[in-house]
Amino acid sequence: MNCELAQTTVHGYFDGELDAVRSAEFESHLESCAECQTALSGIESLRTLLQQSNLYARSSSQLGTQIRKQLAPTEASVVGPAAFVGRWFLPVSGVLAVAAVFLIAFFIIQPRTESTRITAELLDAHVRSLQPGHLTDVQSTDQHTVKPWFDGKLDFVPPVSDYSQQGFPLIGGRLDVVDGHNVAVLVYSRRRHFINLFVWPYREKQSSFVSSGSRQGYNWMTWQSGDMQFCLISDVALSDLRELKEIVHP
Amino acid sequence: MLEPQERIRFEQLVLPHLDAAMNLARWLVRNRPDAEDVVQESMLRAYRFFDHFRGGDARAWLLQIIRNSCYSWLEKNRPSELMTEFDEELHQRPSTSPETLVLQANERQQLTLALEALPPRSREVLVLRELEGCSYKEIGEIAGIPIGTVMSTLSRARQRLQRTLARAAAKEAC
Image (cartoon, rainbow over all chains, first blue to last red; front, side, top):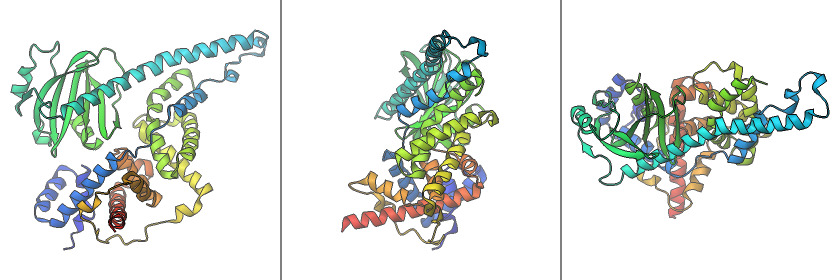
C-alpha cells in the first residue's frame, strides 16, 4: 500500500479545507482505503492530544496592562504650546492623564471583561449540555418541529434551519440561561461532534465584527445580525465554525 | 502617536488577540520570558503601523507582525535554529498506529519537547492550526506561504510529531 492521498489530501479533508466536490471524492476513496483511514484517525488523536494538554500559552494580565500603559498617550504628547508649560502644568496634566486612564478603563476594559464573562458562561453551558440527557429539550431534525417548540417560551423568535445539505444536520433545540436571561440553543452536529448555536436578543450593540477564539480546547465564534447575538461553541475546528457561520449569515 | 479614536480601534481590534500573539511567540522562541519581550515590542510596532492596517482579519495581521519579530529575534539570538530543515524524506511512512499515541506520565512535557523539536517553519504551521485554530488561508497569510505549502507542511509536521511521540512512548514502555 502506498496511497498518495494519505500524505496530503487526508489533512485537507480533516481540516475541512477541501471544497465540497473534492471532499466527497475523498470520502468515497476513504471507504476503501485502510491507509487513509489509519492516517485520519492518527491525526484525529494527535489533535485531541494537543488540544487536551493545555499547551496554549496565554498572555499574563501583567503583560496586557504593561502594553496598554505604553499605548496611552505620554505626557510629552499632551504638552501644548510652550506658554502652557508653567508650574500648573505638571499637576494638571497628571490629573488629566489619570482621568484619561480611568475613562479608557471604563469604556474599553469594562465591556471586554463583560464579554469575557459571558463567553465563559456560554462555555460552561456548552460543557453542561454535553452531559447525558442535557443536549436537547426537543430532539428533532425537522426545523418545523423545533421552531414551534420555542413558541411561548421566549420573548423572541430564534431563526431555526436545518443545514444537513451543507454538512451540519440539525439535532434539536433547548432553552438555556445565560447572564440571567433565557436564550435559545440550536444543536447541530458535525462529524459526530456537537455544535451549540446560542441565540439571544442583544442588549447593547457591540461591533459588527465577527470575533472568535478558543478556551479550554473549545472554539467559539460570535457575531451580531439584525437585533440578535449569535454564538457558536464546539470542539470542532474553528474553520468548521466559520463555515457554519457563513451558512447561517453569508 | 495615533489619534485617540484610532487608539481605541487598536485596543478593540488588535489587543484582544494578545493571547494568540503570546502563544505563537512562545512556541517560536520556545520560552516565555523571551516571548513576552518579543510580544511587547511587536505590539508597539503593530501600534505604530496600525494606519497600514486596511481592515479584514486583525488577528492574522497581528500574528504576521509577531511572526516576523520572532524570526528577527531568532536570527539575532539563535541563528543556528533557522538552519534546521527537514532532513527526513517527505514520503517516509508513519510508523505509528493511533493507539501508540496514548502517552502515559509526563504527557504534557513530552508533547512540549516533541513540538519544540520541530523545525520552526513546521512548528509555526502546526501551532497555528492545532492550537490557534487558523484556517489554511490565514496560516498562508501569516507565514507568507501558498495554501498548498500549508497543507504539505502540516502533513510533514504531524507525521514527524507522531513519530517522535511514538518513540517517546516506546522508550517509556521499556
